[in-house]
Image 1: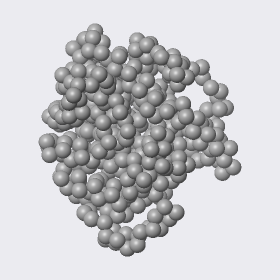
Image 2: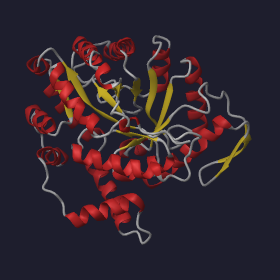
Image 3: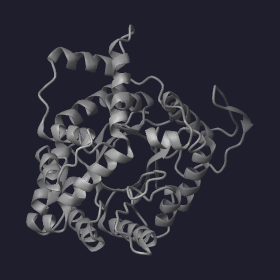
Image 4: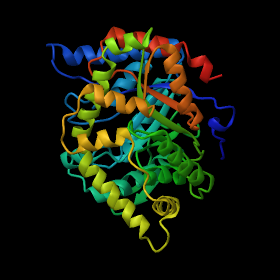
Length: 405
């Protein structure tokens, strides 16, 4: 059942693609059609260049931020135009008012057959505005995701399935089809704070790090929490432990550092940061996460690995905020921050991989040395022109053999 992390075997790192299908204004009449077909072209090129997986998010009512409201359809289309690249949900929104666990299991299994066994299935609990849109109680979202994790592998591996809980009453049904991959496709969890990394490890599923703004030291701490949890897991949700950590970050490669900037990399990074903080209602989400962490700190039972980590951090005292954290704080308070300031702040902490192939190689090594197993390259960002995105995919693709030997 145990699988050793690739990051501990010579620092091999898979280089993947990650997309939101962003659609910033101004809009042409055919903007949505064009963006969706562009994403398909990007996936085809990634397949040709040897990227490991094409990860597709799920968001609803995303407006400019994301057109990816039906990722299962996009991934199905990609499956028919590619041969080798794996197809990742990063991630299916798991509270049942978004997606009932039976439907998640059915759709993923179907896609697994249509793609000849290339599916990677991630689950997420979502965030405040989407909970509100779908009438989901925020305090129930994590538990509903956890139950989905426990239910779906059983649906795939058992001829008959039953489940009874506060949310479900399912009696002796046959969920078909079963996936092509046996015993089932690799499972992942979207993670954006220490508690979610611990939960992923205890579940025995891979961790999808989905925060662009974490400095390397924080990324390393979160990876350590995950590795400790996955080593000691007693009840993995699946038949196989998927001991992997993937992180996404903004990547744009051009012939030179100057060309990358002329292509609009700084503006795209700033647009994404400001738009994401608005879409996710980041200030309220930050306060909710802080409340969860406070409860772990005060948990009489210790609060698990995350509780101990938080107590250790508190004992050390808070380090002074870095430049990126200061800038992000200004954005969370509603201040308009220039593209140049945002780009400079994120570049200083290596949260952005932008520049020439040599610059990108150096920054990709930073992520490799943190111990990640997969780097999800977020290349279609903001209003970066499609031809520049395609060139970036190709240039990064030429570096893949250096990291994934």
